[in-house]
Image 1 (cartoon, rainbow, N blue to C red):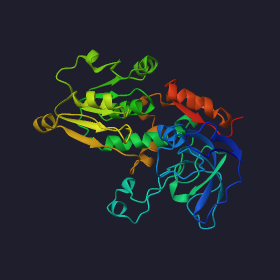
Image 2 (spheres, helix red, strand yellow; image 1 turned 180 degrees about the vertical axis):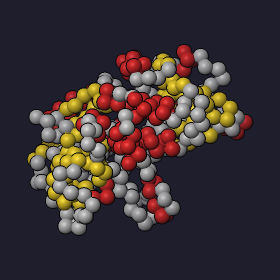
Image 3 (cartoon, helix red, strand yellow; image 1 turned 60 degrees about the horizontal axis):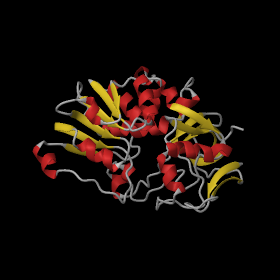
Image 4 (cartoon, one colour; image 1 turned 180 degrees about the horizontal axis):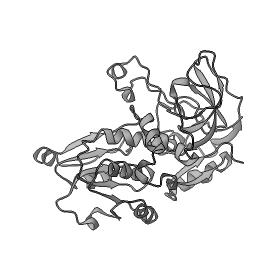
Length: 338
């Protein structure tokens, strides 16, 4: 099979499409013929060698969907021919956090596309328990959005979700717009987004947000927003966003920030205004709900339009360049594409 392999992260020429042996399933695994795998910020960190858990050489790709083409001897719940989305997270089930029902905080972290071969390949072996059957009629674009939407669903579940509140979201990329769609369906009175990318703002205005601007000062909402969500991980956005939360409001840190950076804020204001600061990490009991939401049309939002580009494996370098330039929206890699 053909696969995208990262051998020496951070070095030019360390990523190449390579011929590898077809995977064979372990007794509790299935082999998936990958039809779509999303490009994500986590993949950028993997390419740069910035994730300590990653094991190289590595086939990255964790937002994958496809068709089961082989099953292991002990597999009973999945069958050849089923179309599935794959939850890449593999909590150990034995550590403190797994035992108290918070597997996304597992102390023995493992994930498809991070610590073992992922979806930027024609075929990949994955545990049966990670596979979720997709409903008939779900488009390929929507199917490829299951994993990122499941992260957004977990983020939504971390919020108080009081109907009639006003939301401000930093970041008009795929994750920010998914959060916008979710909070709208959950009863938000208004949803505003901030982004420095004018093209993304223009698309956001077509996606049903109430206001889109390059800076929160342009939104002129006094005395602020009940809920502010950072979907960028940028320290400047986080610091600005914390200052936009009104009394009694909530700030959600949803974007992945550089672990070496710190943000400044006023502890007194957090105390005096009773501001809740919440974190949301990855997926937690949210994969099937994400599939159900996409199958139901996600409140009428045109989710397929979130996917702007589809590349084959040979177009990976161009896809990465577009991702880093902030051009387009969600980029998918289709390993079967010529």
